[in-house]
Image (cartoon, rainbow, N blue to C red; front, top):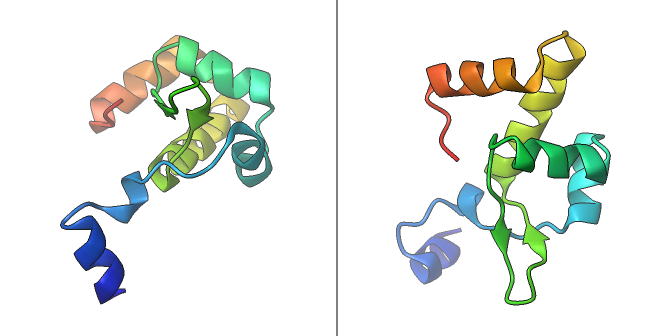
Length: 91
């Protein structure tokens, strides 16, 4: 792990965007259209490749899972945004 950390400097590897939409769907259980809707609602902003493909980091995956859980508990997207803002979750 030292070599990896040395290669990436002090970057937190959880912020490294490495998962495609298909992988994010498998990891979170959220349908692709829901993940895109979360993005449109301003809940997070995935990184993009040069050809505009979305790439998700481990932090994004964790956040999508939290959003899905809140949604399952009856919280709408504006409510989720407010909760995330209050918890200090950054885009």
